[in-house]
Image 1: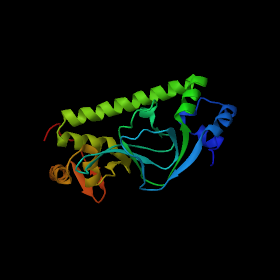
Image 2: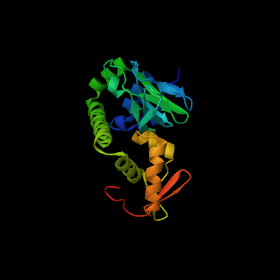
Image 3: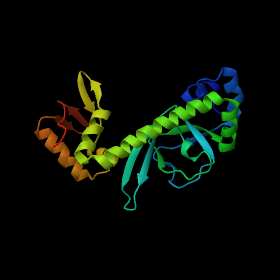
Image 4: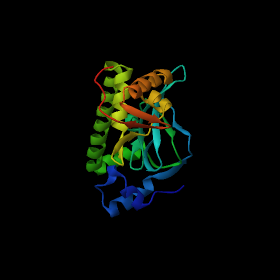
Length: 218
């Protein structure tokens, strides 16, 4: 069993308030776990025994329906964490897959509880992060319930777009958009074709260039 280095723990925002000496004392409580690319790290409904901090790689949170259709919820990379919704033995509410080779520092839940009592500033940082996640989830849920497919697609494009050479480009495929907004690939394709015809976007393979502001409704 290997333990994370002090430098690795220092790179985790939740632990940023701790000194090097404090991190060195905490390191033996953690063990490093490797998850290979595409591995389902956690299945919805499991009760997790450890809290996991992402040291390297990225993980994707998702729901899987009875028809095997997935709704992707978000991505966490180095410095992120998971199992915060199972701190007291509750079943986790989502599944998690490794998007690439992932290394995590895992600490047993009982040890985490003791750590939060010993270092309350870490508890405050965790609470702040959990509240931020809750707000993002509520915002996403509101979009699903209050907006039609057009509204969800255009909102995702705007949120995912990055500036590249003075242009706003979203690196998303039709399938990825469908997973993220809870719509079929055909419905997504229909919206994107209409936006392209209207001169609002220019779509290529795996990337969508936003040319001008989207209309509020279609």
